[in-house]
Image 1 (cartoon, rainbow, N blue to C red):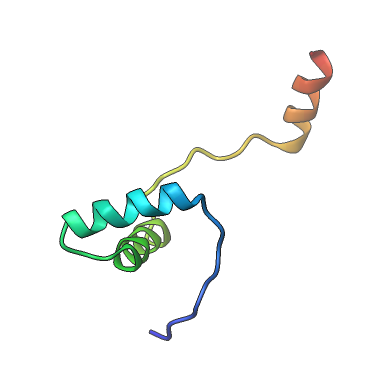
Image 2 (tube, one colour):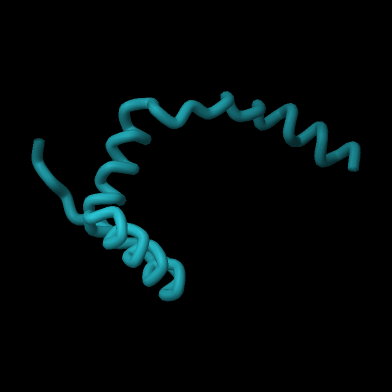
Length: 63
């Protein structure tokens, strides 16, 4: 599998805490993010289907 680099922004304190947790688990933040992406991509995180745009528009119009 070819690797691609990604860049994203996150709160510095959050990153520090996440790195500490990863270190306590004997891993790295990069490995934890890769695992999370793998889980997400493989469907481990099931989400309910989003509401249709029309339904959302009707709800917001009702107040």
